[in-house]
Image 1 (cartoon, helix red, strand yellow):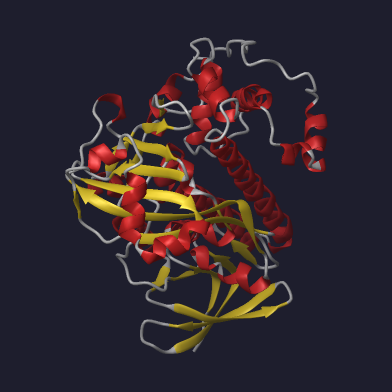
Image 2: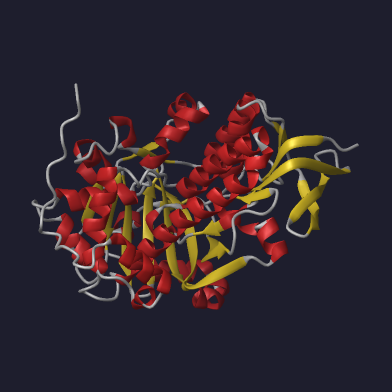
Length: 458
């Protein structure tokens, strides 16, 4: 027998559990369907400080502390033609101009996703969400742009039809609804894959970089080195998807050949013991043409996936889920406003994703040209006079969602505008219109300092 819910969330990963938890907290009858039993392995282990306010809202800060995940304080990079490391430290934001963040938003965690995802889903259960696991969506009843119901095989093996007023698709890269509707568009410029594994006994960095994610480029890609504990590290190679046939012919040989090309990652794992098999994941970035339908929203990787270079994945997924849950709750409270709320979600999450995707492309461009965005950004961020520019750069790569504050937006404009825009964007009429609307055709140089922000009232 089927039951009608206020909302059904497809998927119990970070996006799905976040949406389920927030809707249940708001008093909605919400069903979360997760196909895999937990705990289960998943990649995407390095979080960003921008999740701190959301963790508080979800009521999981205590759970995260008790889990004793490894604290993350920043990121370090060996990137481009120079072999000198370059770092950002999240704590710098506490003293950033414009009072961008508080002290508890200047650090994050490196997490073991099996435990992290289970922790979030259990929190949704405690909030009152009904979780069925393992439960597979076998079919979707679609009528135009509307979902009329789901055919679901539950934990007992029986198949039921589940219906709801609203549906939130957090089915990950499977992208249940986007795939069915033909909305998914792949990005030919970010067409990558990853081969990764885990080591124990690797030599961690010391000093300020001890808790950093470490990224090192190689000729045909880059390597990550993530400390998950004092003993355990995650190490992965990201390279072009065109190398997939070679990788599948021998994951170990493929991985080790590229690890050997690194300066730091190879030396730090030389005496370590590999403790898990090699795995291959497709990292081909994509975006759904739309993130909202008549009675459904797309969340997290079900909506769009961004290259893992700057660790946006989990952070972007959970922020999308927060916004989606708030819009869904508003639509349930005032059905006449549903269309406007869903349009807002589509536009807001789309703009956020597009900005991060373009920033990732800028960053990749630094691995090809000495005079590219990355190297200009590096010279700016290393210059003592340009603390505003460094604050903007660090704020963006910290995953904070509130980019429209007065000071933050000003810093971004001063920081990114003079650094050059890809030719593809310069030919885009939407970009040209936005540039004209900004009223700043005479873009100032970064070295032209911004005025000091006014002091806050006591």
